[in-house]
Image 1 (spheres, rainbow, N blue to C red):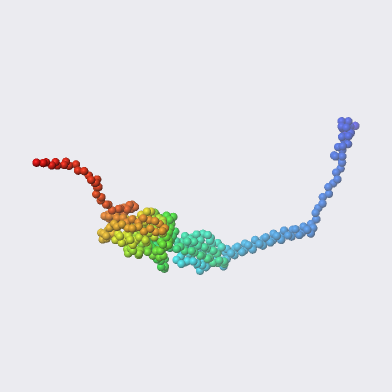
Image 2 (cartoon, rainbow, N blue to C red):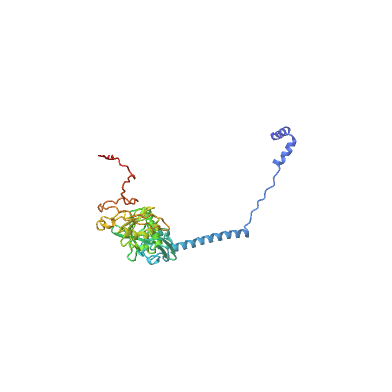
Length: 373
């Protein structure tokens, strides 16, 4: 007996026939072959491939056109800033054209599309006379620059030089052409921080606006303004009605409208009473000090100004201020000495009163006795 038959017999005896019958089809039955269909290259596939190829070709053509256009705009001589005449400047009166062209000198021969407009605008605004500027391209090859210039409000005397200054404290060079009528400002300089100059110049602008509201044309009477003290604006006024000479007035740092009104209402009385008003201190709330100080040169020649005279106060509607004329401080110091500090103390005339005696006072002398002979 062969070995294979022997093994079959052992398997038949070891496993029941039912289990062999169930497992036989699973492993021994021949499976049906799977049919593999190959897709043919039809008309629909041709359309899809044609569309894809057409899209790729269109993208390549568009990229080529964009590249050619960009290369033309960036490198073409027709787009270049070839000459200074292609820079157009407007809005300038004191800003020179040469200073603007110097800023765009580095862009000569470059395409206008390569010019950094934001950087050039910042450089234009760094010019002292320029407050703000606008820089833009005008295709194909022009640059337009529009500037807004600063407005000066006063002359600035710094040493032996005379400059112009605007309301923000920007110091400006005096142009060769231009007719200006401003008061002279002292007490600020280019060495002072910009924010401090701006704060003091704002105080001066408020002062000029306040006195202009009181009387039209009052700015014409202001000859000089001293801003050396940030809390005390000192103005020299000339041509005031009732005061033929120039008057130095301490206005403090606010309330300029009311203080100037008090000055106009009382300057005539002060001049008539004191003989001459050289200076007035309006910094105090309830009193005014007339002639708080006199210069050493004026004291010997004008002794009449030192005469103390009481002045009747004149009260305005907007500010009730008590006017007190005080005796000026005697000026025996040298011209280079420091000025004494002003104190709001009104000197009153001293009256001498006699001591009173009690009425019907009895005498303590002994009475003489009468003798009879």
